[in-house]
Structure formats: structure tokens, C-alpha cells
Length: 602
Image 1 (cartoon, rainbow, N blue to C red):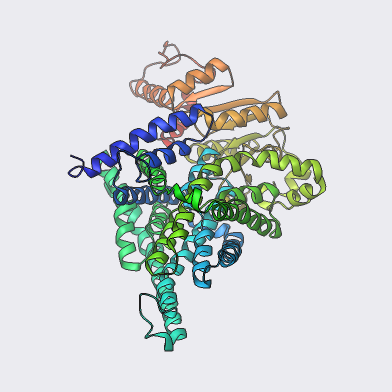
Image 2 (image 1 turned 180 degrees about the horizontal axis):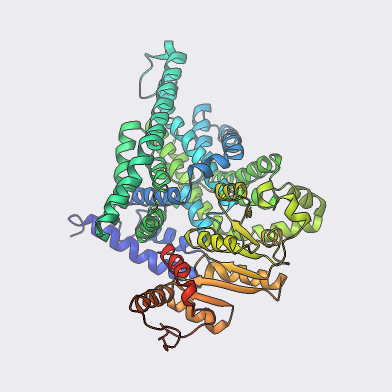
């Protein structure tokens, strides 16, 4: 049965053990991904008993990488990528160079050849996008400026790694490896030709996606959405994430992950991008688990006994060497301390591209088998340790504040101008403004209503291009994460009369409310939710005026119907859809505005 149903047995064993070990890990207050890695070790060839199909697990994990990168692209616009290019491009280049140098020196000291040492160093220099995304999601920092810097940094690393992958066979020919040595007389010409072809392929793919895909994919999504078929819509999203990625990778020789990222980024132009992200979320989560299971399956325990010092050195380069290098780079570019710590933690691991580089190096005779075993073991350790590094960011910052407050103040004082209100607002604070968190479909309609009523309002929005557009329209807006106290203070929360949170969910809203009330105890809070359970929870806690999207939509549709039949709604005792919450019984005059808000959330 095992040979006939290898796909089913791999999926069943991988998911089941990942669930069991993930639950155990959470109970022990450790990240669930540690449990996923252990599940991979259990069903891998290094342990007795059942052994899953390693090659099949690797392919399934690639699907997870594609879906995850596609999801990132749906939240990461071209403007976001361009906004962080000043730090992402030079930072990625310098960090990869520094990590490669450390790895090369270590391996050369062990007695490896220079070529083998360089390949090991290159494999250590690139971080895992999947691990980064999971960490940012856990920290609720995926859409924050620091998160966007880290993602942009890794996108640049991926592009550089693609170029390195193409150049490795050429390097092997120079060394007289498996590809032969007949081309050694034209080394320089061959190298330049390979680099030129690679740049043309990558450039052609990016141009095709930005010029053609930017128009075709949103149009396709709109046409499919018009059919009303949820199955077709989901199929379209998965096709764009996987089908286009595979086709582009075959045509342009670009990685699956990079293709999926750009597919998602151009689909973000569609008005249905939010729905596309929701439809693909369950598959993204499921297959991303398989990525960690596949990593665990590659673990070779004998390396712990045979080369413990070498393994310790490799782990040290990944966790500490890369972190210190990236920390120094970010600080030299005069970014805040928290940004430097976030980027440092993000890059202190290795993953999929490291395996691909090492595997190709092994095939070409440029890396010994020991190097592959070292990378796999170090990857597992660094991935397991990475969540702990993110947890250590606040304590580390406190240590800096305690022992070097002037340094922290100096670095944090260099803030992006768009993260503060313009000088005229700072010198003349608004009179009891409404602080509006989020400028999506809901927040935009609320802001337009407040402007029409000439009520002072300050918008907090994570996306820089949105804030820049608002400022051009004369709206007081700042770019930042409302979870951070500094952002709330810059938004004049102390002078505010009301805080309106348009992001849905208690997980997102609770920390914002806690910090805002701590600063301004007299603040009135208005928030929304898309879940009836969360709505009841917020009501019980009496945290503010809560609007439940489904209730508001049903109520206003009912009011409209009654008005069309000329029923006097003022004298009629209208039913309330669910338990009453302060502020949820909108008046007839506000029906149109609330209806728009509710529709905007779906």
C-alpha cells in the first residue's frame, strides 16, 4: 500500500504528526514550527520505522513556498518594494557578502578548498522566506514598515541567489569539474555571457509581469468573480499562484518563489485581492507546515557526533554572524534600533535557497557531502531558535536603553518624516481629533464622511503610498503601526476625543485599545468585527462601541426595504439582529454610510 499511495501516506503522516507535535510544542510554550520539524525527523530516514517519501515531501513543500510567496505578494505592492529599496538592495548585497566571507574563512580553516569554502559561505548567506513570513505573522508585523524592509531585503537576496545558481556550473567548469574544462580559455567571456543571459531572463520575467500581468491577472480575477462561482474563483487564485509560477520558472529560469511573489504582487492591483488572499489562506497554512516537515526529514543526526565543532561554527555564523552584520548595516543607514533588531532576527536562519545552492554544489563537485549535512543540521537548529530571537527583541532594546540611552535616543530620533505629522499640525494640535486606524474600504468611507462634516481626523495607515496620497489631499495622516505607542502619540492620541479602529478582530484591536486608554483614559473607542463571537466578547468586556458587519448590513438593508414600502421606521419597534450593543442601532439617516462600510468589509 505504501508504494502505491506514497502521496497519501506522505500527506497523512506529515499532517498527523505535525499536528501532534505542534500541539505538544504549543503546550510547552515553544513555537509550533519546532513540532513540525520534529515530525519531519520522526518520518525521515534518520529514525527507525516508517519513512515517508523525501522527494515527494520536498515537492509538496515547494507548493507551500509558492503559496506563501503569492500571499506575500498580495499584501506587498510595487510601491512597497520601491519604498524599501534604499536599505534592501545595499543591505542584502553587503549582508550576503559578509556572511559568505565568514563561511568561507571558517571552511578554509578546516582545510577545505577555496571553491568548497565559497559555496558553503554562499549557502549560509541567504535566509528562508518561509521562516521569515511565519515569524512576521506571529509578531503581527507582516504589513509594518520593519516587516516590509525584511521582506524586501529577502526578495533582493532571492534575486542574487538566482544569479548565483546560474553561475555555479560556470564556476565548476573553471575548476575542471563535471562540466568539463574545454571552455577554460574563454573563462571571462563565458562568465559575462551567463550573467547577461540571466539578467535578461530575470528582467524579461519582471517586465512581463509588470506590463502584461498587471493588466491581465486583475482582469481575469474580475471576470471569474462575475460568474459567482466560488470554486472557479479559488481555482483561479491557485492557478495564478502555482501554474504561472511553474510556467514562468520553466521559461525564464527563475525560482518558483520569486515567480509566485510577483504573481501575487500584480494581482494586488485587483479589487478582489483581499478575497483572493482569504481563499488561498487555508492552503497556504497547510502546505507551509509541510515545508518544515520536509526540512526535518533531511536531518542527519550523525553530524552531531562526527563534526560537533564544525556544526557549532556554522550555527554561530547563521544566528550571530549574520545578525551582527545586518544590525551594523541597518544602523549605518540610520534606521531606528527596533528596525535593526527586527531585520537581524529575520535573517538569522537559512532555508530553501540554501538547500538548493548546496544541492547544486554537491552535484557539480563544488561542495563535499559533509557540507550538505552541516547545512541541513544548522538549518533545523536556526529555524527552531529563530522565534526565540524575535521574542528577545524587547529585552535587548531595554538593555540598550539602560546602558546607552543616548545611543537609542539618537537612532530613534532619525525617523522617516512620513511617520510624523507635518510641522504645522505638530505646532498647532488639532482640536479633539478623531484618530482613525486603517484606511481600507471601511476606513476610507469613514474618513470621507468626517471630512464632509468638517470634523478633525488623523489617519494611521501602514502603507506609505496611501499616506502620501492622503497628505497630498490635505488629510492629516501618518505611516506606522498603531500597536506602537510612539505612533499613537504622533497621531495626537492625547488630544483625541475618539479612536476608531477599522481593522477587524480582537487580536489586532486589543493591544491598540490598551495602549490608547493608558495614554488617554477619557478616550471613546469605536471598533468593528466580522465575527459574532468576537462581537459578543468585546461587548462583555465593555471596551467600546462595537459594530458587527453582518448585523449592520442586515439592519440597513431592512431599513431600506421598509422605506421603499413607506413604512414609518421611527414609530416601528424594529428587531435587533443579535444582542444590542451600544452604538449599533444606526439611524435611518446613517443607513447609507453604514451600508457602504459593511459592504467594504466583504
